[in-house]
Figure 1 (cartoon, one colour):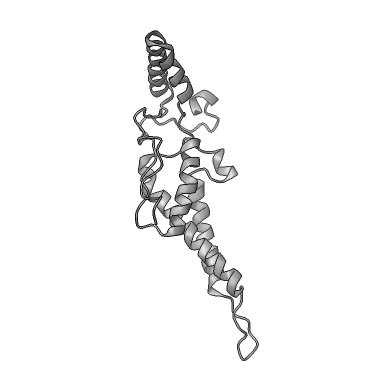
Figure 2: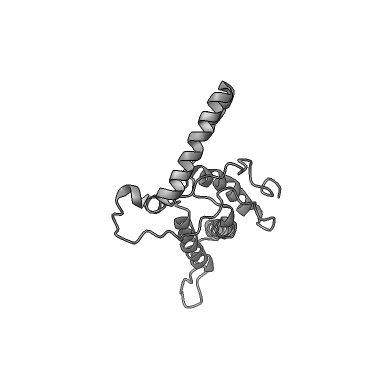
Length: 185
């Protein structure tokens, strides 16, 4: 992207950046119910944005776990309130859930930035190009000549993208199916 935009930040363009395989990581079985629900909600969006790779499993699990804990702390704050019963001297101590909710929110926000889940962070990330499945299906249905032309153009584009832009292209073998283990509790 920086090659196309003229490298406005003037930082050196690295040719040695790692390029993990794109795709949806599997959902860890040990996530709690709320974390799995968040995984199921967010993974399709991250995949559609082109920012998800299979090696992102740990970071995504950390985000989902933190989200679950933040939600739990917020629910307890709603139930019990932000302050405890007054002491004998009249002092109103703060509920420990206030500090927990704040800590989890800060951590969750930091992890959200890693995946481009905040408006500002979306402007700073580079997404993987998403292949157009409709074009692929149309070319296949039109016959062998159209399919050959399509695959030749696709392969040439992928080669140009990798060579000229040092960008990552979507692996054609990546499954678009839902992540495993998150459909059960």
